[in-house]
Amino acid sequence: MSRPFALTAFLVLAAAIPAASALAQWEPAASPVGDQIDALFPAGAELFCSSYLGKVYVSTDQAQSWTEVGTLNHATTIYSLLLIDDWLLISRQGWGGNHRIQRAGDGWTAWEPLPYQDHELTSLTAWNGGIVAVDSATLVRSLDHGLTWHPYPEPDERRVMRLRRSGDALFADTFEFGVPGMHLYRLVAGGDWQPVAGDFAPLTISAWGEHQGAIYLVRYLGGADGEVHRSLDGGETFDLYHDMPHPGTAPSSFAAAGPLLAVGFPTSVEPSCFLRDGDGPWEDFSQGLDAPQINQIAAQGGYLYKTGGIAGLMRAPLPAVTSAPVTPPAPPARLAVQPNPFNPRAEIVFAAPQAARLTIHDARGRRVLDVPVGETGRWTWDGVDQDGRALPSGTYLLRLEAGGGRVLARQIATLVR
Figure 1: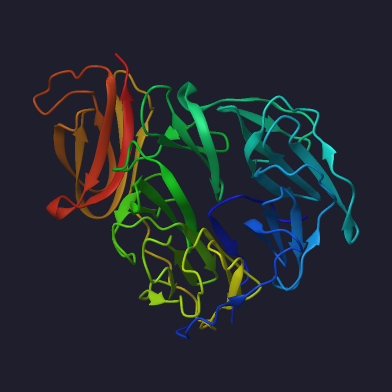
Figure 2 (figure 1 turned 90 degrees about the vertical axis):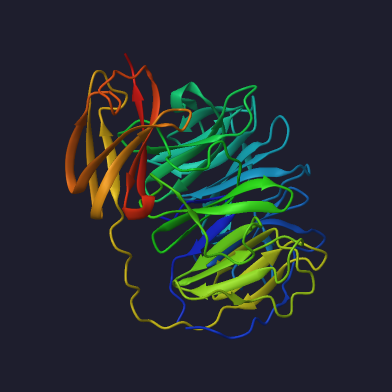
């Protein structure tokens, strides 16, 4: 059974590449004959791409040559692409754009339109034994490789812009009509959608990545501006991450290959590509790039690939890295609210690497409660402020803080009177 993959700005090469500080050796890679590459999708020993002409190609020789997958006739933009089991599904712009094709031996059958064609199915994502997709800002799910689709619950009945997956968790960029910005929600199998805690709402996510158990997201702030936030607890909470090249500039893409992490930037800054081994220092990896603009970077087969700019697709061999095991980060602090929403009281479960304080803030950011809680344990909150007065219904931000106010963990709690 092949590993599912989906369109994302961040792609992982599962096999570690045999530490590193060689200069980049970028070179032109092949493009499909008479066509140009739009987005890349590594999948094990295969490298798939969607093209400007709305076609799908695959390479098995590190982008030295490409073979079209089936035959697609009308040229419209491919919004989403997903490989799951032996099936490849795509969604293209316009009515009638949802298609699938099945692997047959060393080749493929013919593309067939999905029975469902009312809207483009964007953000095709393999999750929890099926496929979840965005259908005109609502969620739908298929358990038969796209043959039939059924409604799937949205977070707090919010509209969904995009789906992402990290490990066993599903993430949704959500919005409300007439309200600027989006909010990020997280879902695990058997649970309910929960808002992700972090000092970044509302937000627009322009890039997303994973590396050695950490999740990175780029909060786009307009123009070339942006900031990176990192999660060490599977996406439950995010904190502003400062150890990045070009601070204040929004990266356009991440890619990981074993212990190596690469990041790319648009044309507004140079150098536009950096590489690091584990948590080591960032090193310039842009030597030889004819066009610095990076739309996407991806790792596969010992190479780093780059799209964007007039030079077309380019590739560079990744440097060798040590095979020494990577020391996992210390267990992150945790903070949970049970039940949530709650009335009249909630149990706060916490764990921290050091003595901590619990602070609670209302929707305007005002601190309404501050109590010392130690390192690990449980504490019952009756929905009152520091003076014992009952607080009104609403959403409250709980923060587990170390000395100096450093935030260790965050959680959102909803009080319903």
